[in-house]
Length: 368
Ligand SMILES: Nc1ncnc2c1ncn2[C@@H]1O[C@H](COP(=O)(O)OP(=O)(O)O)[C@@H](O)[C@H]1O
Ligand SMILES: [Mg+2]
Image (cartoon, rainbow, N blue to C red; front, side):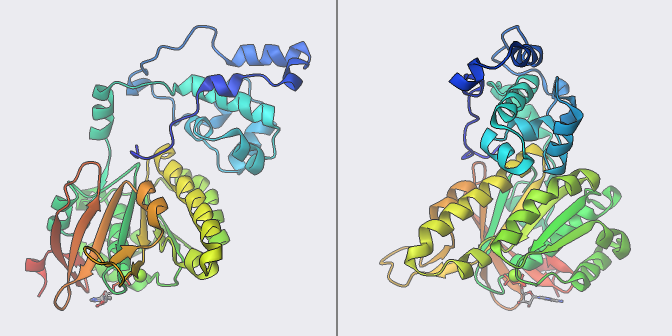
């Protein structure tokens, strides 16, 4: 779970009644009583074996087929997806009334439990997190195993530093068969700059002897032409995530459209608000469906800085606070690149070197 995600809203808030609701006929109250367990929930969550987060949304007690259809077609497929939603967004995306949205959220939350968890059970669930290797042992060591699922990783750097190449490599590692060290899972690649190259995927496959047809068929590419389109693609992704067992979602790049569309100081606030909303969508998607989300980011040069860094990832504090792990890339000699972890809840600020070759991201000793 991201260290900076919003705390879940209390169920008390969701169940509090408006004057309108109090006037409602008795049947509505009966329905609420049916879906909300009478016994008080224990404050410590059930062990992960009983975890109902991934249960299909049509299993919410009391839900009718019409409402469950609306939720599913809007991409709210599991109890966790509904439990982590706000009434406002369910109303907006699913065309249901506010009271229904509140009831569904309360019911989903009471099913999966959104109270406290013991640190021990958190450690156990973290040990079960899957890691996506990067193709370079040095980079994997830096990242303590690779790119983590259920979290948002930012890869920033100037142009040609290897951001897109790392994304291509991660696509192959995620899609590749388990016997070759992969996750044998699907990938969603949101391409905002038109730089996705299937040929590069084929080249990287040859290093592992992986079947390029298999790998390419597991990568689902969405070309986003503007920031609205970029947001819609994320909203539409849950069905694909479930159908294709997606474990990695890439956004290459996170900020280019936002930066091009909202120019000038006057538009900065609006841009940051929209970007914030988008980042929260990404964060929640990663947690709810247990996928790794990787977003590349361009950098901005601030020559007027008196001391310290003069190059900064775009998006300011909003991006900084939303990303769980931030990796900063810079160029070295020739095909060498330096990666530094600039923010992580579990990795120190250290750096390592890797190479970009025709066969993808490799350790420097393996590059010719
Ligand atoms: N087929 C290839 N073989 C070796 N290096 C490549 C190949 N394709 C791209 N590169 C290297 O990748 C670098 C571009 O990295 P890229 O990830 O696309 O940059 P960005 O950070 O702008 O996304 C270039 O410097 C190029 O040398
Ligand atoms: Mg790129």
